[in-house]
Image 1 (cartoon, rainbow, N blue to C red):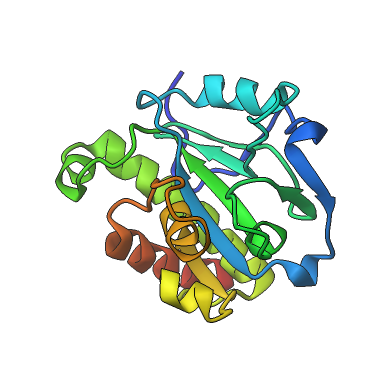
Image 2: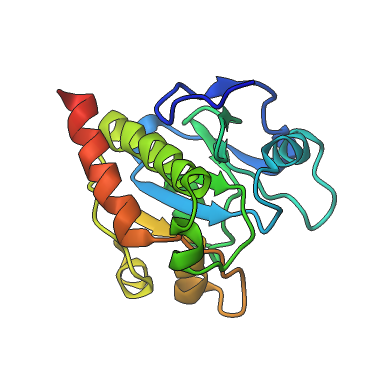
Length: 195
């Protein structure tokens, strides 16, 4: 089967299992977009979807709203669902966040990401998903550093690594690869969606 265009709608398939979430929220609470990397082989989207759809075992209750790779993206939860995407030390990052899992080995260099069309397509698919939510929830496309998060800023885009650095030292280090490249596309795609 051919890859979907990067801006194809998310496939609504299996839902994240309720034991991997923390309830529901009103949509006005959604103000933060959080990128993650799965630390799985590139193109392992179906396995990640199945993992999030299965009941959580003790200590493994993570989840995400969307799972994305180079050929498709799956919507695992609606925006009202609070996914347990990032341990946030008791702050409100999960309650305010929409979480995106990019299926890839973690901590690859920007050069690795830009090397092939397939990898760039995965990043474009992530940027398109984020742009849809930027428009739907009126979220600014500014980058939130660990310092900004510690100061209470919750309107913008960040990654799991920054939440960890801000609130849970020694935790996850998955980041948003090629951050500036992706953010430029989020802004461009958001303008296209609005027009």
